Amino acid sequence: MKSVALTTPLYYVNDLPHMGSAYPTIAADALARFYRLQGIPTLFVTGCDEHGQKIQQAAAKFNRTPQEHCDLMVRGFEELWNLLDIKYDRFVRTNDPRHQPIVTEFFQKVYDRGDIYQGQQQGWYCVACEEFKEERELLEDKRCPIHPTVTCEWRDETNYFFRLSNYQSQLEELYRTRPDFILPLSRRNEVLSFVEQGLRDFSISRYTPWGFPVPIDRQQTLYVWFDALLGYLTGLVAPEEEPTLANALKTWYPINLHIIGKDILRFHAVYWPAMLMSAGLPLPDRVFGHGFFNQRWTENG
Amino acid sequence: MGFLTKDGLKMGKTLGNTIDPFALVKQYGSDAVRYFFLKEIEFGRDGDFSESRFVEILNADLANSLGNLLNRSLGMIFKYCDGKVPNRGYDLSNSCNQMVEQVRQSYANLAFQQVCQAVLAVVREGNKLIDDRAPWKLFKAGAQEEVEQILYSILEAMRLVSLCLYPITPNLSTKIIEQLNLSPHSTWECQWGILVPGTELPKPQPVFERIEVKP
Ligand SMILES: [Zn+2]
Image (cartoon, rainbow over all chains, first blue to last red; front, side, top):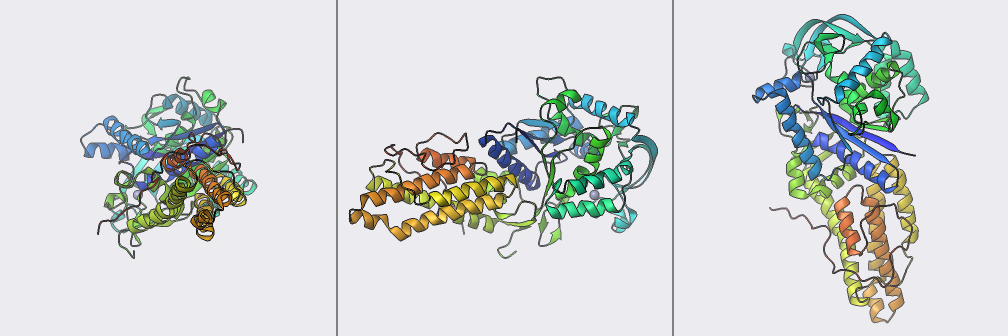
C-alpha cells in the first residue's frame, strides 16, 4: 500500500459526543497509528456535520445561534478526542466556508450529468433522522420508530431530487465485482437486500435556512446528507491549498476506508457511491460498518 | 444516532441514560477506554458494555497479566542481573514472530480483538515461562546463564508486545518501552533481539495500576 486515507463519520453536532462517536474514532485512530508505524503515509480524517434542521432546533432550545451551538459542540468533540489521544490529521466542519466551493463544484457535475431534477416530496419527516419515513414504519401518533419521542411532520414541498434510480445496476455490479466494498459480510447482505428492493430517487434539498443554498435555487438549502458526505472530500484538501475539487482529488483520493456505524450504512454504501459515479469519480475501497453495544448497569445485566 | 440499549430496550439519545465518554476517560484514562472497546467487542459486531466487565477486563489483561509480567521480570533483573539487560535468550522468539505476523494481518482486517488476543497469548506464555522455570531457583543453583536467557526473552517479548499494542494503548506502550530504556515506538521494529545486553534499566515502575472498585 503506498498511502492510506481513512475516515470516521462526520459526527452530527446536535449534542456533545457520546460513546457511539468515540468508538469508531478510537478504532480509526488505532488503524492510523498502525499504518504510520508501518511507514505508510496516512491521512486520518474526522470532523463534524453541522447542517440541518435538527441543529437549528438544538441551538434554539439553548437560545444559541446555530453557529454558536456548532462551535460549542465542536469544542466538545475536540476535547474528547484530546482526552482519548486521538491523533487525527484533518478535522472537517461542514459549515466551514472552505467546504462550500467543493459542494458547489460537485453539485454542478452531478447536475450536468442530468441526475438532478425538481419534483414533489410528500410524506412524514423525522427531524431527528433528517429523513422521510414510510407511513407504515411509524408508531402511534406518527412518532418515529427510531426516535419514539419525536412526532414526524407532514411535508409537502417542491424539492430537488438525485436520480439514485439511475445507478441501480451500476451499484449491483459494484457489490458483485468488489465483494469487500462493504464489510463485514452482515452489512453487505443488508445493503444487497435493500438495493434489491429497487432504489428510489432521493430529495437533496430542504426549505430550512441552516445549510448551503442549492446552487441553482437560493430558496432552498442542500439536504444535510448530501453536503455531509462531501465533507470527506474537503477533508483531503491540505489547509494551505485552495478548496477545489481538483485539490481534494490530487493526493489522497480515492479514500481507502470509511469507518461508519451501521445506522448510516445506507448513506455510505448506496447513496455515496452513486453520487461519486454520477460525478465521474473513483469510489472508495471499503466501507466498514461497526456494531453497537448494549449498555448494562447491573452486574448480571 | 440513538442506539445504546439498556436491558434490551432501544434507547434513543434523547431518552438519556447513556455512557458518558468524558466521565469514563477521566476516571479510567484513555488507554483503558481504548483497550476495552477494541478488545471486548469484535469490530463489526454488537457487544455489551458494563462497568463491572470494564474493570474486570482491564485488571485481568493489563494490570495482572501484562503489568505483572513486566514488573516481576524487572524485579528479578535488579536482583540477579545488576539492573542491566542480560545476555540474549530466544525462549519466546518463535511465539513473538507469530504474534507480530498475526497482529499485522489483524490490524489490516480491522480485527482489533484478534490483535489483543495474540498479544495476550504471548503475555500468558511469558508468565508461564517464569512459573515453570523459576529463575530464583536457577539463580540459587548457580545457573546464571539460564536465568539471563529467560529474563532477556521476557524483556524482548515485552518490547514486542508494547509495539503490537501501541496503536491501541499508546501511553501504556510508551511506559513499557521507557522501562526498557528505549525511545518511543516510531517504526515497526518487529525482529527479535533489539534490546542490547548491558543496557542499564531504570527503576521498575508499575505501567498499569490495578483499578480498585470502592464497595
Ligand atoms: Zn427519527
